[in-house]
Structures are given as C-alpha cells and as structure tokens.
Image 1 (spheres, rainbow, N blue to C red):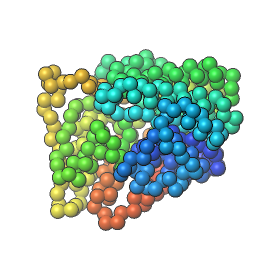
Image 2: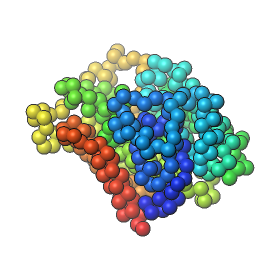
Image 3: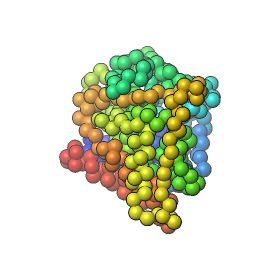
Image 4: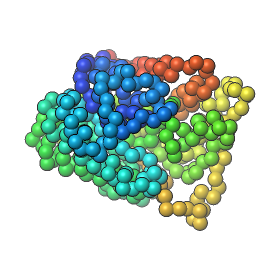
Length: 376
C-alpha cells in the first residue's frame, strides 16, 4: 500500500474522471483526490439539496463537471474525450436496494448501460492508464450462509434487481477488458466493497442516516432487519484501497477484481445502532435529549415479509487485496462508528460548525494512519 508521500507523487496534476462524484462516497473521493494533488473531473446526474457535495461546495475544487445522465452515451463520450484522463473511477450508480425494486428498469439501465458507456468512452482515451469500476459485495450469489466470506472466484448472481444489476456490471467489465483492452497497456479493475459509514450521509434506506434523521425529527430510530449482518467500513478506508488498485499498474498479477472489505468488522444492524447511540449520546446535547432505538419484533415474521427481500448475511474475504497490496485494516469497526457518530453530532450541535473542518481533520487522520501502517 502506498503512503501519503507516494500517493501525492503519483497523483500530482493527474487528470482523474470520477463518475458519481456528487454522491456520498463521491464527495469523500473528490475531497481526498484534491488533497492528494489530482485534478478531478466529475460526471453525475444531479446535486441533491443538503448533500455533502453541496454543503462542502466541492464544485469549487473540481476542475470541471458535467451534470448529466450516465445513460447518455454521447454525453459520456464527449466528456471523456474532452478531458482525456489519466485515470477513471466509475462510481455512478443507482445504489439503493429498495429503490431498485420500485424501479428496476432504471436501475438496470443506470448500473449496466452506465458501465457500458464509460467503458466504451474509455476505449478511445489516448492517455488512460487505468480504470476502476466500483461495484458491491452484493454481486455474489448469496445463500445466507452465516460466517461465510465471499472470495473473488465465487459465482456472480445477485438476487435482487440492484445486486443483479451490479453482477451484470462486473460481467460487462470482464467482457470489455478481454475484448477491447486485452492487448492494451490500459488496466481495467473492479472493486467489490461492502457498506460504508461516515458523517454526512443523507441517503434514504440507510440505517445511520436514519439515526441522524430520527434525532433531528425528535423520534426513536426504528430498526428493520435487526439481525442482518454487513461488513461495515469507515468510508475513507475503501477509498484508500481503490486508489492503490487504480494506481498500482506495475504488478503483473492476473487478478483484476478485488474484494475490499474489513478483516472482522461485520456486525448486525442492532449492534451497529446500539454503538452509534452510545457514542452519539456521550456528553450533553441540546435539551439533554438522547438518541434511542426500537426494534420491530415482527420484522422476521414470515407473514410480514414483502417481496423487497435483502440478504441476511454478507461478508468478504480480503485475502487477495492483502496479499497483492499489503492491505491492513486502518479503522476498527468501533473506531468507524465512533468517528461517524461524533461527526454527525458536530453537524447537529456545534454552532456555525464548519463542515470543511470535519473533513480536513478526517483526511489528515487517514493520511497519518497510513503513514504509520505503511511507514515512510
């Protein structure tokens, strides 16, 4: 794994196209890339009111951006051709499982054809060094075997429309890699990451944003699927691994798809919320009101189940990325939850909180940690 000095040396003035740059992970990625000296070019379909991207005014540090639909091939090709990037990170997606049940056609069009479009545009880049397609841990055929960790060679066959569309995105990337980039110097990678947490996420149907909204609205958190288990990570952790995969094009390994997950950080939803509330409630807040949660005891009742089913257990084997890149986990799950809870709390309680301060502190802490782990 690269330390901060190496990352800054490689990325200085490099052109990086980031699709989905206005999303939650996208905003953190823009901030991190800018800190490392890259020139960031963004392509997303919208800027949501109240999003991190808007609050941080990240448009001011993006070299150029296009707000358009990733399904628009001509728009994607025009932008990629104009920028002629050194690197591409493809994050643009419809990422919500429940929303995919409600609108499967748009989900498939965005997640599958969006991948086709960015890869098709990449075919004609003269300066492109490598491209990383960020997918998900949900690409695997999941039989909900407790404690089983998926490895990269496991069958790709997501169950629900979102997961399946990302499985298809992986297959599209495989095809393009072998059909159009096989004899090219351009490296094509995919990264399969799990759930990420961090302050500032406002996405619907995500548990920690739900916790934040519950406090703002003076309500208790309502937990569904309390025993669902996920490999949660602090948001900056997988981003650092993505950069190492994207930039390390000199190794001659045949592997091109990587699980990007924690060592042993899978926790149940109720464990996650319980820890979040604990850290959020430390010290006095406004009116000394605490954040509490209630569980829907009927959530596992067969009669109450609907068709919008999600996997019960997910965990990733990160042996490959550890072997090739020397990856070592940067944040424990406890640290990740604590940093996230404290960040949300600052956004609520601190008068005139400068949200940029939170991110500057977070990125400086990340770079200090990697310099300690991967000593200079």
